[in-house]
Length: 506
Image (cartoon, rainbow, N blue to C red):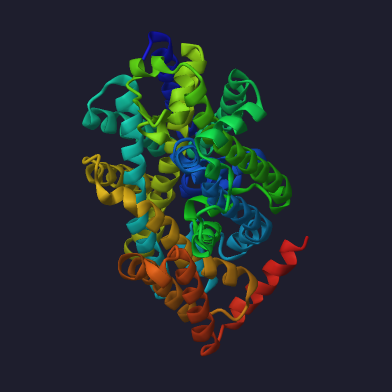
């Protein structure tokens, strides 16, 4: 990596730390640390939600999949875009209103405990355990990806790269809490968006235009131009089912709760949906155009950056398809711009890790420490408990990620499915069905999480070859409804539900 690229990259990292330090002085109580005091504007909330959602998958995983297998890999993008829009459309406003009506809840377990008047705190504790379990492994997988980027870019050893990346993310999250995470995510989301628009357009211009790109890809493999070639019905359903996950992702829906007003939802929905659709198009085009580019242009310079190119049957291919975005940044752009583009990749990784750390530490402070051990703990005390929890969880996640070949990477899809199946139906029913009970919600969360684990470990393949989120979501929904119909809700729960419906219509 050149000096200019390194300096640009370093300036970006320092900028993230400065934001964390600035937000430290604006974080006065637990609501500020966990939810930013419900002060987010629609633009920050929308881009923060999008950036914390997409992770390195948007700049590395999806372009790499399109590059290697063609447009048949785009079904997941369709499912995700649809799910994200529906989440903003149906969940955002009512959740923002309900969390305030239900004793000003500031975390998802807190909301569920208050929504169902659970004085035993068992629902809150089980919810917090699910969050901590999945997010610790989810975070470690992001740290592996970040370490590999540092390793490839700066020549660090893997372990050094891992701890450098961890220190940067933990520092601004620990210092500034939700406000630091939201604003860094806003900047990171903007950077990711611009990168995904600029890179494929510059590459397309270099090739000579869209027709040339399509012709080149068709000559390499005509199947790459077909979305349904070689893709079964179950595979398409599984890919689209990723969209179900949005309704239960704590690090995403907490942005709805942080909006300064329910009236900001339509504007935030437009910004967030536009960002996501254009970003997904950019990622798909990056992979698609990348296949044509590598085969029609001189890419010998990539050897300088240790990006290997193989040749088989006259076709040039990257040895690692997920490096196509990195390859473009090194071939097409000035070292300063390359540094910005590498920062965009790191942004996509950091913006997810910081959100996961914050939600996990919030669960420790609000849903364990305060709910079980120190009901009268001061806000200052809880903020520091949250900060300490952030540090501890990050260290555990980093230790899990010490091995770059760790199977923890396989748990990323489990985590998405686990949250979607455990919380998705419960959040939706809590917002739209008055009759849901505490026992119904508790049974649903447990059944949803267990289904994901059991289905993924023991039942995948053959007629069961479905992404585990789908059976987990459906079983949760069925069990929750059955158990709820066997019980009764309290008058206070009914009154709060009616109050929420009226306020959401204003």
